Length: 177
Image 1: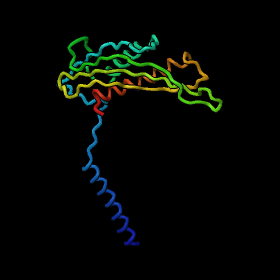
Image 2 (image 1 turned 120 degrees about the horizontal axis):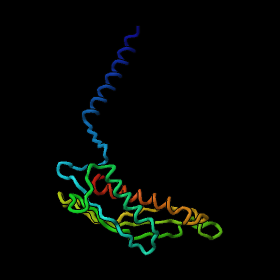
Image 3 (image 1 turned 120 degrees about the vertical axis):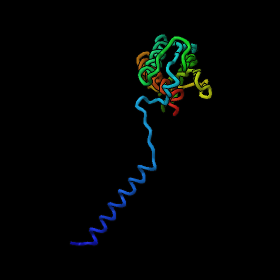
Image 4 (image 1 turned 45 degrees about the vertical axis):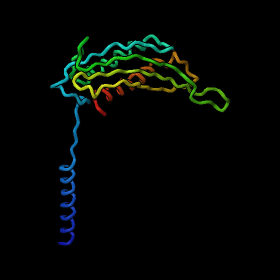
């Protein structure tokens, strides 16, 4: 039996276990399954106003798609009760921009890709802690090949942009990321 080999392996195992214990005691990981950092002892309700579409270009379904997605996000990821008025948290705003522009040009000089963009202005009020209040604009973009018509890809692209903006709003208001 080679005692040097056994001592070396024992030393390595002890070193690995020691490092693991040091890391476990030195680090603290906090994860909340609801993805929010709300103190439910103080904050119990949320008031989400319907966002109006004030963009110069309007696609009809976008307003209701956005409003439903925003309300669903808070319903699915928090324990807050949604109320019509006097909420502990208040979110309101408007869709301010929906547009498209050429993003890239092909070697023949034609537009190859088009970028669709959506911007939403949001006012957030925390009646329990006004230091968290804000008014911000959130923007999302999606790109599609110019060989496709906007009508054929619009619903998918708008859905993706709405999901992105709703995540941004959620993270800025209650996730504190």
